[in-house]
Image (tube, rainbow, N blue to C red; front, side, top):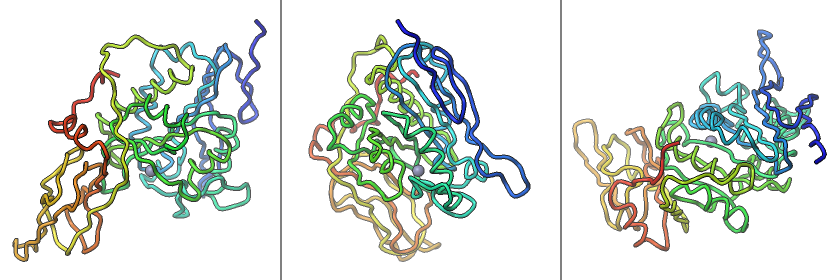
Length: 340
Ligand SMILES: [Zn+2]
């Protein structure tokens, strides 16, 4: 068998059957400290797809950083087919500042595909496109909820695409949401390059959430298995990871300003007419119940119990197979086979 060609990245060649951690320099700080995006490239001996797993495109969404840190220690990754690129911190500026944004206040996930001569965000996006995305067939981008919000582990993907939907099923997060592509997102730019992408999100910004991390590791490994990067592994349990596909979702908003105590939690089934919280003034006066109109599952909620009128409080997803969903989620959601 002919030796596989080396993988070329950032002016470097990585030989087949080796892996390397490298740093791609981006603009420095104004004190002249150099800033670079850390990447690990695992270039398998045998041919196969190229796949990237990225995190912290929003710099404060750090669950994915931990997912990649633990994922890379899996022995299955020592012998892969194709090429795996791990990008634990894409927005290095935001990560160091514990911020979603870049120093220019731009959102990197609205700046793709970027440009060589554009804003700082556009330049970072451009480098990531050029060095990583354009070389890949598949991608998994890891997120959490935005600051002061918490999300139940969920996948966002183009569910109309058959292969992408199969990857969603393989990943096996409890909930999948068919989400529209946002202008300037990595997912939109990837799709234009023909890259099949999943976006996984769960937990809060600036926190590690063990439940989300474990589902994330298991999901990434299952996708790598599905596309042939790693060999199928023996299962400890034969239980299926049922994925519920949401028909749509809506935020329940604060009917008035005040503080509140939540009566529900993430992953909880709710029924039409149920009370989710009571908002009142600091003395408990002017109490006003927050009632949900439709049955569904709580997939996101504010973790800040202070609201102005109109603020988003609870994110409720709707499902066609609500009865089956209720059976699975009725008790505290127990995810099978979570030792990752
Ligand atoms: Zn995000």
